[in-house]
Image (cartoon, rainbow, N blue to C red):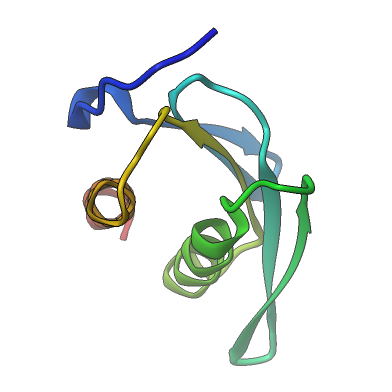
Length: 112
């Protein structure tokens, strides 16, 4: 399966509440699991642990998203991310990052 059509609406953020904790799933293009980052509060500091599938780059986004969400919501947050578009340029990758960050910003504004 391939995908080379990058559209902002194709990238989706969904949530699942797990007790007091939160699971955020962020996918787009050819959906998969590329990385999972769990951020938690250690006193006043958010810390993160990440697991990434080899040859995937989602961890570069999932870590920062998990840290931001955990700090903003003061709860443990796991971000599972899998976004793939064929033949993305560096500009296309930056567009994906910007779309993800905008969706996370919008989500957090609704939650705090």
